[in-house]
Image 1 (tube, rainbow, N blue to C red):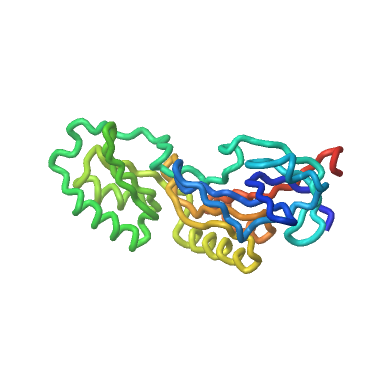
Image 2 (image 1 turned 30 degrees about the vertical axis):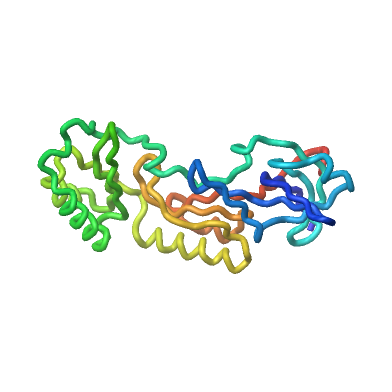
Length: 237
């Protein structure tokens, strides 16, 4: 196959072989080793003696699922673990109202119901409730800002945060379809949807490698992270 590649993951050895396994993090406490997506590392016989734990392996594809290793470097666990793009719940970049006294008089159950109807009518893509010690807000990714504000504003007042989305429901469906089709080639490691730190809503995925089909998705509606990257180096070219 000949393409030079680099990938980070967890090295494991069995009686005869060495493997590099992608590790995905769904939360700071979660580590999921995806053995089904492992690649075979073909190298000198001392690979198992020299490498354990998390590494970056660089080399050349010799066949599907196998890399001839030319260079292998230990890396920190956090640098090797694949994580979905951050969501609003983990990295809020929006300016949110203070929690102090803001809940008073708000019927959150009714607000959730109305927001859900707006999603069904495609005036909004998604909404989340931020309720912690510092903030209280309902954040809505809206395709029709005026409608969202007119229907939710009277219920939530200053606790309503509306983000005008550059995506549409149709764009998200298209991105979902394109990402799901990658599974046929055993390329898709993880797929889902999330509200980004700036309040927009999009399809997110982790794949083994980037493909031309993924490039056809609306760029704003699909965020992809690839485990195996092209690599250029005089040492391995």
